[in-house]
Amino acid sequence: MNPDVDLTALRPGSHALRHRLLALDSRLFEFAAERNWPYAERVLPRLSRLANHGVLWGATAAVIAVSRTPRGRRAAARGMASLALASATINTLGKRSVRRPRPSLGPVPAVRRLKRQPLTTSFPSGHAASAAAFCAGAAIESPGWGAAVAPLAFSVAMSRVYTGVHFPSDVLTGAALGVGAAMAVRALVPPHGHAVPSAHPRAAAPDLPEGEGLTMVVNRGSGSADRARLLGDVLPRARIVECAPEEVAAELEKAAVGARVLGVCGGDGTVNTAAGVALRRGLPLAVLPGGTLNHFALDLGVEDARALGRAVAGGEAVRVDVGRFTGGGTDGIFLNTCSLGVYPELVRERDRWSPRIGGWPAGVIAAVRVLRADGHPLLAGYGGRVRPMWLLFAGNGTYHRLGLVPGRRKDLSDGRLDVRVVHGGRRPALRLLAAAIAGPLTRSPAHAAVQVGRLRLTDVPSGTLLAYDGEVTEVEGEVTLEKQRGALVVYRPHDPPPLVG
Image (cartoon, rainbow, N blue to C red; front, side):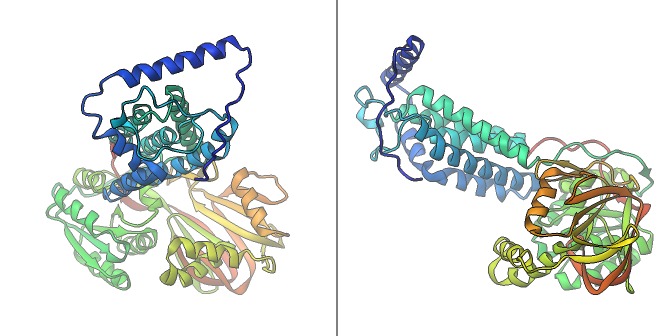
């Protein structure tokens, strides 16, 4: 934060209502200063200092993130994103727009005062904004975690009046701005919905009350072993096999030989491999989310081990569509998405850098390298002629767009490929951003969208990259994308999961 040391107060003028409100604010401050707050002298000043620069909320987010639940990690990430937006707004606009001096410390007992007084202007309270933003952001993803954090957030906000560094109106306004920041983040990046997709068509699947007959293959590389052990607590007679990433395919094939139900715990790429085995063997699939994004499991309605265990024990399952691609002797399936153009190039470039510098920095470097100005769009034939395009995206089912990112799929058996194309032209980065913001517009000079059951591309150059569920392969010649309706039986609870962290 850059200190704003100009404490010059704006002249109030002759507005009578403003005078009365400021006078009331001062009286409330003095009233709070004169009161004896039981047990607060040892706690609130320290809590106020801990909240400096978001340190307290960073630690709280870390605690929530290690809760071993996807919803908890999303709550921590959303809370920190909301806090960042609130802090940026307060420090760049709020304190520079209303230059209100800090309250006089005269009425405040010395034992309450902070050792280092803040130098910024008083209105609004940045601490209250950060506390409210983090709490509201966490609550949007997980009401349970939001309720757990609320007392801490309230205490931080109140500590600013208790220690004499803010008027009550500073705190109330800061808290309101913090909640507003959380709602703004919600509008940009919608939370994962808690309602599961349509229950039709339901499928017959074995009910395994204690899990006997289920073999769960766990990809240790995705850091999901702990989640599989939690499933073992719910289904004690299930067989759980942990293996390294390079052993997953072989272990799935071995597990399918004697199992009544094939289970998998890992990211979307691991789930894709398991789905292929389940299709060939005619087995139902039990998916436990264990990767970073877990698109398929979450869209299916399986949040954690408890939800999956309930579905397997009760034989609750549905049929879902499977996407299939073929091209130049290469074929495969996709449960989430399939794409050509810049995205597969970005995935390959990211995978090249991530072992050395980590996932997020690698993604930034990959985006810069792939979207450089001298790149060339992919030329492929569709609609009767060869056209340039920066990206072709095909989703297995309709993605409902909300905000700047694709929303979730509400129906995994709708028989549709959600196809979106970003046309070739100058400045690919701007075109891709425009497509992301505008959503699935069917008429645009930059991008288009259509929902079909089958798509055929021709004249695809040799060595063209195709990404499917996070994996990358090469295709050429005629490339076909199509749907296999209701091809896969997967377990998922028929009742929505409980709204807890």
